[in-house]
Length: 319
Image (cartoon, rainbow, N blue to C red; front, side, top):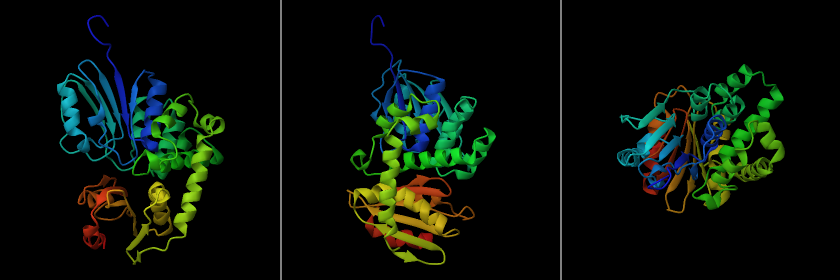
């Protein structure tokens, strides 16, 4: 560009299955040179890391707007165009001529499904992977049926989604098996997720480590079991931080109708919490989590930093 630097584009996305599969579909449909900015699943305030300037553009995928609003307004004020796709609760949506919002917090929606709509279903198999990874099994099954996938293929896509999501859990990227940005670079060449699974070693690596971590979690005895609640405490270890979400999902399947909680001590000497609640609960997991600085969906939520002094109050709220 004459008289200045060429404009840049930044893709800012959650490092979990939903964020990865949303970006995968979008860039397959709309190829664009970009700078990826991502991190572990719970590292959601990523817009503050974007070094954009006037004339640059940003796409945001699967990051709660509430945690990024200050940085978003700063970017818009600097003359940066922002396109935002997300499914989390977002009070007080801003309006700006440089901002395009696609926010849908309805049950059964994830960002991969928003992008599936946006690109007119051109890469629906990746949307299925993302939905399975985001614990939207019923929606994923319906989408898979709509494109005529056989049962064996559906189960493979489910396993890939769960493995990609498992990989994003950790205090930092040092806990993860494969950094999400590296996974994105591996995935981006494959319009068909089955080709990715067949030709890249990443899936097998993730699946094996997830199986190993889950075996360790299965040996743990729940800290508390009542008719309403199951609470498990995992040790301060990298494997426990990686498997917290997968183990919470396992407990929810094993104990239908009960609230399931997995706690893991983190490097900040607070507790990381993964919370699963039944669909018919009057107060959903997201609302419960927000009381303690967390967020999520009605049936699945998390808290990054629950002070140890608040454990008793948190469990009383759940009961």
